[in-house]
Each structure stands twice: as C-alpha cells, then as structure tokens.
Image (cartoon, rainbow, N blue to C red):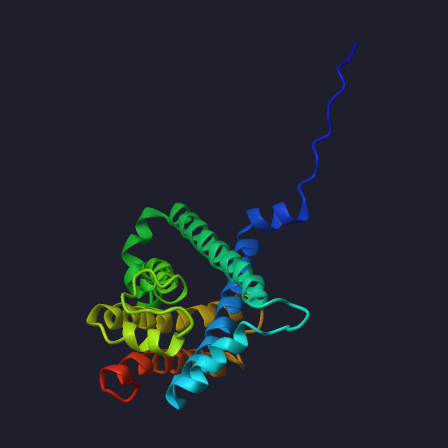
Length: 234
C-alpha cells in the first residue's frame, strides 16, 4: 500500500514577506517612516519650551487628554506607545537581519570596496545602537523620572531644565541627536528607494529633502539643551 504524502502547506503572506529581502526592506522602510513621523511631531511639541513653562506644561497636559471624553486620561499615549515600540523592534530586527544577509552574500574579494560606502552608511549600525540606548535613557529620564534627581511628577518643563542642567544629560542627548541626523539622512533616502518613490528625476530633490530634514531635526533638538546651558531656557 502506498503511503499518502502530505502536501506541503504554502507559506503565508506574512511569512513570505518576512523571509524575503524585499519584504524585510519594506518593513524597515515603513517602520522607519513611522518613527520619523513621531520625531517630527515630537520636535514641534518640544519647541514649545521656548514659549515658557505654561505653554510647555500645557502641551504635555494636552497629550494626556487627547480623545477626551471617549478616552480616559493618558490612554492616547498608551495607544501610541505600543505602535512606536513595535516600529523600533521591527526596524532593529530587520536592520540586523539584512546586515547579516549582506555580509554572508558579499564575496571576500569585495572587502576592500567598503571604503566606497558613505560615512552615514558605515555608521548606521553604531547609530542604531546609540539610539537604542538613548531611548532607554530617555524613558528613564523623562517618563519614569528614574535618573533625573530633581524631577517632579507633573512638572515636565522643570524636569527638562533639570535634566539639561547636567553635563551628562546634555552629552547623552546631543550625541544621540547627532546620530538621529545621520540616521535620518541615510534612512529617508533608502526608504524612498525601497518604496519605489525614488527615480532619476527625483534623485536630487530627495537627497536635498533627506539632508534638509536631517539638519532641521538635529538642530531643532540640539537647540533645546544648548539653550538651557546658555540660560535662554530656565
């Protein structure tokens, strides 16, 4: 009697996307754009610090009341945080896996060609590590108030000034924002190529947009701790 053979189950769409290089690049691009959108909105909100404590604290309070009365106090933030966390995790995992695939597929004779890579490309890996560590520090500093010795619950403006009044707080933040700039400069261009937005006619415009947005984000975020150090925000 012939044994029945089991027909192999075709891979699911999600599984196929996850295993393919194109799928991983797409996930990396989309997750990166989600984080980029958050960075832009976060910077706009943070710049309210230049309008004084009332404006900045009012903005922080508004974030916790979005959706009221349908959503309870703070629920909007807890709906956003899992999305951002998923984007960070997926971005990191796909970046690591694509890097491993690239190294495995690259012949040994191409090792000397690494000098041709741009500075931003060669620092993406370290930039990702720096930003991952910074996210942890940032949460401990401004969300849980664990590492901010002078932090007080419900006083975001005062907590910001207290954090940026320390040399280590400024050093960590400024270093991370420089890494953000390099990451955005290269990542936005890569995402445009992956998602099929880039073309020969758009190359120059996309590069200008990537460089410009990276510069605005870097200078915008760094302006806050620098202003605290100079006494412009106190």
